[in-house]
Image 1 (cartoon, rainbow, N blue to C red):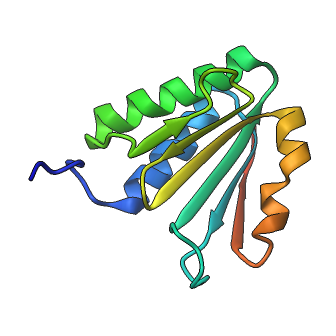
Image 2: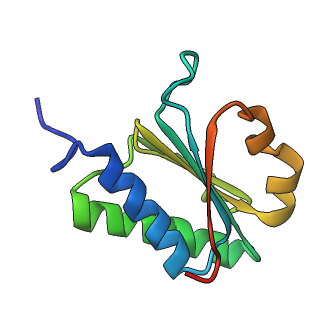
Length: 125
């Protein structure tokens, strides 16, 4: 059986996703640590939004490229590239959500997982 990752280090993938979002000027980057929620299916949700469908797509594409290049990790699943309003990238232990601002506001994932430990990252880093 072929290994999907060169590294299984969830923390490395998590950090690289956040850094890539920052590099692409993503807005309101939030990481939800779900490790202590026994019903959660992943360790982290990393959420951000872009100002346009073009920016949303660029952020998501950069995440796919950087994680593959730096970690050797391929996404287990990815969806939403057709309309670029909500792109989901699943690295099993890290699930990435890149939204268009209006779509993020509508679904409010952070409120659904309000009991998770929340880290926010400054847009200007």
